[in-house]
Image 1 (cartoon, helix red, strand yellow):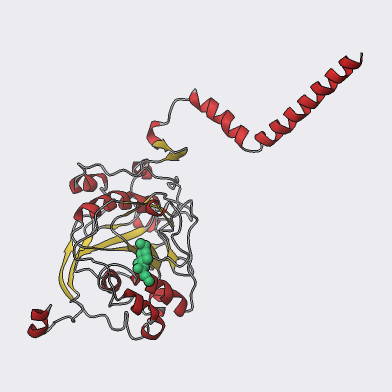
Image 2 (cartoon, rainbow, N blue to C red):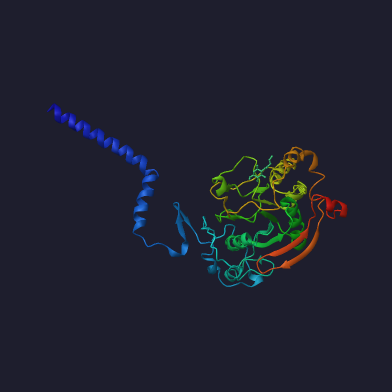
Length: 355
Ligand code: BGN
């Protein structure tokens, strides 16, 4: 009798423990496991891309053709606040045989100079993307392959400016700003590294109330911010925000420090840094070796220490350059410009011999 009672006691205890475990599991993990089990028996959805590391990744071109026929300009409603085409994570790979002609073919609504407007609604935002690069056509091709459909998914009206210049990333951004604004009244400018591909279309290419640092989670930094004040990779400002901090510095020649200077300028201009979430601000970097002609700038430490004294006298109000050419390519506007060297825009012959 005594043994039977104790057996019952153990059984009840055992069931009790099991109930608690079940209750805990069912909060999230259990449901996930059950739905995973059912998914095994479901036919995969072939139009919506691939599952990578548990996240369902969309083909960046999926569903773009469902936009419907163009509408008369007079009858055009505003685009919805949230685009119905936004789907989340995007599948990013770098197929070695990709040709620019293929990117053109896949983007039939993009017009001369890399411009686009949604065909059946009036965009709420006009964004220019500025991409300085130097001998990186190979990277530009991949970026254009992803960026065009990415921006179309967000129902933006946009233009893409790129250029093959001497390397001074921040000064080239000043040039890109002035040249883009000369053409159209953009309400937002994205300053974009050529080798960074956005991996989530919820990372909307529109400006915020404060300067935005969009490339918050890059694969090369383990999808985390490398340090709190980091402002590199991809950032976005309205023209008003840009001019409030006197644009970007003009004298960081070579690699490093200019993005930190820009970050400091944001706060000197009395603004904060706005960022998307780590889940959304994800970027994949195209792997490459260190560029020749873009060596580390040894002066960057000294220059950064002085930003608070120099920013008002170096920036958009002092930028000097000469346009060499402006080509309206099918997928982007290519601006070639002489920005000079550290010795100035037109170094004297004597100086040139020295360098
Ligand atoms: C930092 C660089 C940035 C660069 C990031 C990520 C400097 C200044 C040192 C005082 N800053 O160290 O320019 O984007 O690393 O690579 O070198």
